Image (cartoon, rainbow, N blue to C red; front, top):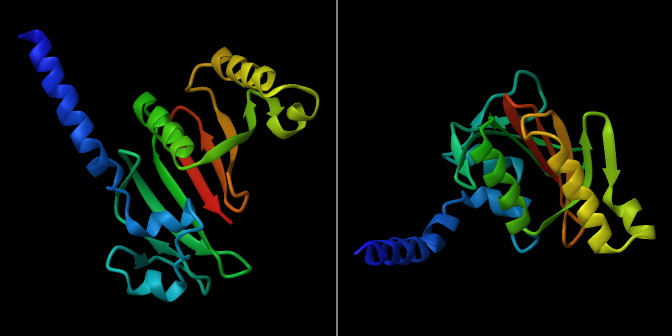
Length: 181
């Protein structure tokens, strides 16, 4: 009977996974894939999900709580000098959220490029010049595992197409993730 329940749970989970994966808001996709066109200032302004929260002339749009990789976050969008949207996600820290968001970045095709924890920096690109991927992966894991997840850290990520970048900051109280092109 226990095996049956486990099988039933696993089946339901696997069947619902595509539905869970598809729960990211549509405005999120241009930040993770070039297959989707970036939203313009007008798109954000006309969207029912965003409201204008600017306190000056520079466009700034905000949302109520959204779920990104099964994690509740608050989002803000500004525009860089090239009029490309820059997404900033902010949420509270928990080990579950910490793991969900990092796993989500990897699932979205981002690769870790730089790790800074407690003043120790590991630049993955520089390390790959003289070392194999296996050696560098080991170094990254050793650095990350040396500190608890609550230790303040900055992680730099890049998309596989090398056109999208993510900056991660967490400190045991909050998680901030900034997406830009």
